[in-house]
Length: 283
Image 1 (cartoon, rainbow, N blue to C red):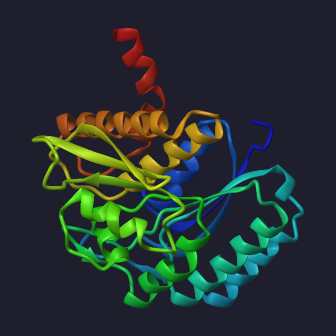
Image 2 (cartoon, helix red, strand yellow):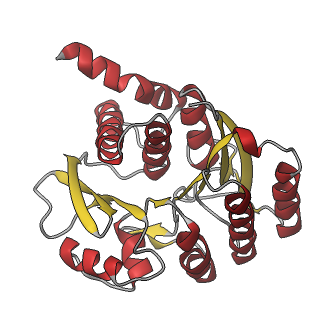
């Protein structure tokens, strides 16, 4: 793991652990240096009753992207990860940014977390943003991590069948050759009190199951994706990386459920780095 830098394009909140706050901290504690580019500046995550702030102005966002390119750091960059994006223009700029980098440095991994919404809340970005993510970002991604709502949105389907989802991915020329992890899914074949993390690679699906914890909170996708990327960059096979990341998330959520909390704090993020060691010691 000679290349140690990761570019993160995501939301920034003043309070709480979603977006950049979670992704950057997990990756830093995992031994990586991060280059952070905020897409929005919010007081807190959108699930609370009030929120202040808004998208980073498009001209400022572009200036940040250009500024990073001028730093001449790409030889040290291992990956780019994108998450919540505030405007349609930001999506276009991000796609151009990624394509420029991939053209000159094709070995850099691009993980796209296509943050659009979830089953409970529905779509929580502008519809034009979600459409642009589907058309511009997903096709250039090496790995994507949509949740169940997002993959249904991407495929324009309401099906609750994992087999039908796989067939639709196979026939979708924009994403059929990618590595896709559908996170936290409850399909009609999902076992009771479990969640499915579905890996689609080379036209085949592998389902890895994790215990379902009865909580709904913001930031779970970021925690999963950050650990997943860290494991992959350290050479761990995709299936094992998904299994480990799912186990980490389930254990953190169980810890929070037992403590009666509904929002991540710094202790949860730090604890997520120690869960695998603690579990191995208890066996």
